[in-house]
Image 1 (cartoon, helix red, strand yellow):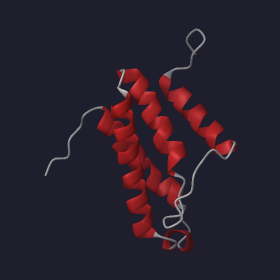
Image 2 (tube, rainbow, N blue to C red):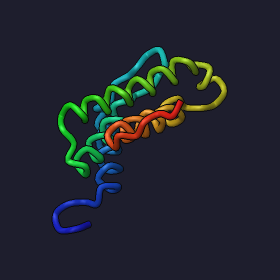
Image 3 (spheres, rainbow, N blue to C red):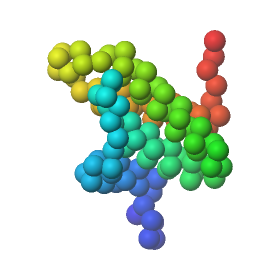
Length: 109
């Protein structure tokens, strides 16, 4: 802790845990995931660190949601039947996509 604030990695972890604990998460039914808790907390933290604009933040969140929802929909309920949890398996990729968007990283084709 520095002064009255937390270091970014701890703030992100605490905000995610807090959001999940209070059920401030959404549900994408086709993929059976809760993208907001991971994507939004990662995007907010990095956007603050980079002094991103509101448009950049919203674009990053939309990008992260798109990745989580498409990936989890492709896996569907079969992930659960095989013993996996779609949220923990898919949401990391959406968070990385959101952060990559904020950092201006581009996909190489």
